[in-house]
Amino acid sequence: MDPHRRTVGYDSQLTLKKYLPGAALLNYRQGSEHQGFIMPVVLLTDPIAPVARAELEKTADVRLLGEAQVGTLEKEMLAANVVIVRRSIPADILRETKVLRALVRHGVGLDFIPLEEASAANIAVTNTPNTNAQSVAEYAFGLLLGLQRRIAQNNQLIRTGKWHELRSEAPELHEIANKTLGIIGFGSIGAAIARIGHFGFGAKVLAARRNCLEGPNWVEFSSITDVASRADILVIACPLTPSTQGMVDARFIRSMRKNSILVNVARGAIIDETALAVALQTQQISGAALDVFSHQPLLEDSPLRDAPNLVLSPHIAGVTHESMLRMSNVAVSDTLRILNGKRPENLVNAQAWPKIVEQWARSPI
Image 1 (cartoon, rainbow, N blue to C red):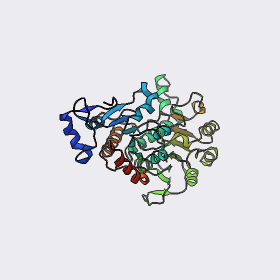
Image 2 (image 1 turned 135 degrees about the vertical axis):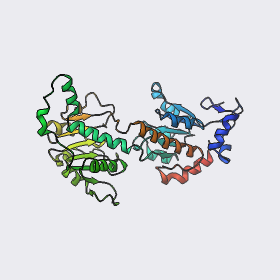
Image 3 (image 1 turned 180 degrees about the vertical axis):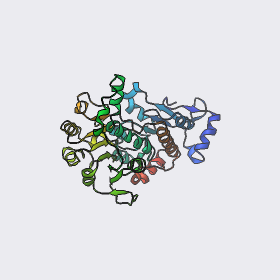
Image 4 (image 1 turned 120 degrees about the vertical axis):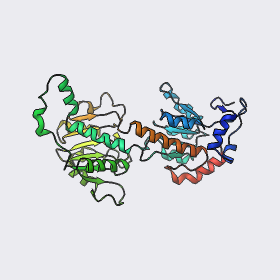
């Protein structure tokens, strides 16, 4: 019996039948050890919500790649039928795997997944859109308020008995109300930031996005350069693509207003971090708050470590109990569809679907 699989007996066959009715159940080869069915293997690169994992375990042999096993990702992927992804996947392994059906992104951004290679190998790719937008949007304003109202400094001063020190700096502290909030990227996260900014804080919202679809009448849509030059607060919420990588460079920052604030809750590589550090040192902009970096964890020699008026956060904007549960539930739902031979709800590489289906028919689990 394949050591990478486990079998289930008669009682568990009833659970399998619940999720794998009819012909799909016949695709499961019988195991010899318990006269049961061999379960498909689902590899978790990182933990998911326990309730979602428990649901998945009714149907699959779910294995978590522990921290001590980071170096064995490639080996474990060779035995997996589905990988639920929360870390970078090497492209070369996709050419070697024989049984992998899908890469299910536990999150929204696809920069962890070599999409072209997956499509070429007839591997489905999915993600969990709209699941962490509220969490990221709320955190963006937490970063902004922390920077703009100097919350961390206030906390430290009061702990050291310096009650009055920052109270004298009121002229340098600003409200969000009636400021121009610029947002680059108007997907689910950008839209959530816009709603909170407009209805919660009374900001004027200016946004740039890839498509020309109509949006709310309280949002003014314009070009990236126009948004950058007019915003008092500029939030980066767009995907990392070849066109956005390094987009916020020295020239871009020079186009921003001198008293503006830059917030990044998208991807670190969108910003030229050296250029940003220089801009902060020379007071080209008022400040910045970053939840993401080009190298994570932040490198010891990163110029950002010594930059003034900068709030740093460890890529945690989208991590809340609620968002993790939503992401896990959506990821597991699509995983179950994939194991049952059905098209996933959140298929990303739709153009490859016809060949993916053919591959599944030739190589059932």
